[in-house]
Structures are given as structure tokens and as C-alpha cells.
Length: 283
Ligand SMILES: [Fe+2]
Image (cartoon, rainbow, N blue to C red; front, side):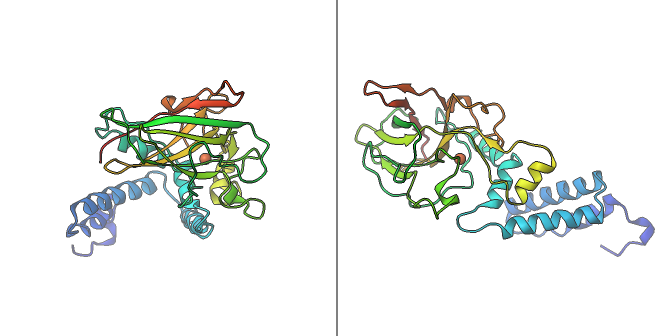
């Protein structure tokens, strides 16, 4: 495209020129994504008449969000969660034909790989925590109804003070409130956790600044995190919500699904318990 006289510059001609640079992208999916991203990003800046100072502030915000991130602090993930983008990805993914598979929801910023293996019924509480204990039992099955043996069920959660152990490794061992269980022959599993409490997302980084600037409360509804994997099935990232949370309708990361809310009740042995069956779709 020839350089246009200055008087001919317009948003439309600029957008067309930028889009034209992707015409030879060999990967058609990447071409689709780059063209749509360009279209929406430039249209957004044009629509709000983004000033130079605002643009620089935005770049600074993203830079600092990246700089705040490390192996144990997924600040970019948190930003995606707060913007509603992570929840949207779950909605898009679950629009696939997954049958009666358990609803997926956010991974969140506190997942750490290789949670310690736990035997059936073993507690994930390895440091002091006075929270009420919560037994979770369930069955892992395929959407065909068949029980799945040897599925791994990773669980991680926050403690009574609202913190995930990785947020304060001076006080907590990294294996605290995390575990990997395996389903038995009939697909059944049993774990011992603590009753989750509502907790604030980290507010000491740029995403926290963003929440304060727009006067949004940074609280998550009480939940346990699950990552369930089994051979021949799609991995499931989900959460189990506690009905006693006061934030089921205002979860700051838009993660609550009605099908994932449970009401713990006292078991025969006086321990609080609930059931969470997991249905996996074939891969
Ligand atoms: Fe969480």
C-alpha cells in the first residue's frame, strides 16, 4: 500500500493498513485471532479516544502486573480472572459437546503443580488451622456413566485466615492444604479438607489497584479447588462452593456455577461432610 497523503489518514484507513499486514499468516487460526485482536484493540482505542497519558498508564499497568508475577504468584492470571476473561474461556469451552460433564470453572492464581499424594480420607491439613474440618466424598465417572478408576483429584484451598499457604511460606509448609487423591475401583474418593471461607484476592499488586480504582470489592466466594485428570478424558478444572458464603452472587472473578454449590451437613461421626461427584467427558 502506498503512503497516503496526510489529509487521507483516517481510523478506517489506518485499521485497514494494520490488518493488511496479517494477510500472509500461514496458520489460519493465528490469522483469525490476530485480525480480530487488531480490529477490537484499535477500535477500542478509537472509540474511547485514548489519550497518550492513558495509553502510557495502561502499558505501565501491564508491565508492572507482569513484573509482580513469578512461579508462585500468577498476577497475569489474576488480572484475567478479574476482567471476566477466565470465566468466559470456561463458558466457551463448555459450549463444546461435553454431555453431562461437571461444570468447569476457574483455575485461579494459586495452583501449584505436584500436590503431595494423599491416601483415601487423609487430611490435607498439615499445619495448625482451627477451621472446621470438612470431609468431601464423591465418585468420578465418565459421561457414559462408567466409574473411572485411578483418576487423580488434586485439591487446594485457603485456610481460616483467607490465605493460601503459598501466599505466606514463612508460616506454612507448601504441602499444607493441598493434596492429590486417587479414585478407587468404583470411582470413589474421599478427602479431608477444612470448611472454606470467603477470601480477598491479592490486593497489593496492580490488579488490586485496579479494583480499588473502580470501587469493586475483591472477595471470592468460599470454595475448594479441584483439578481432576483421568486417562482418555478431558481434564477438569473446577471448584466446589459452600452454600454458607455470602458472596455466591458477587464472586469477584465470576466463577460461581449453581451446579457446583454444596451444603455441608453433619455426618454420623459428627464431622461436617458433603458429596461432590465428578463427571468427566472423553477426550
Ligand atoms: Fe481460590
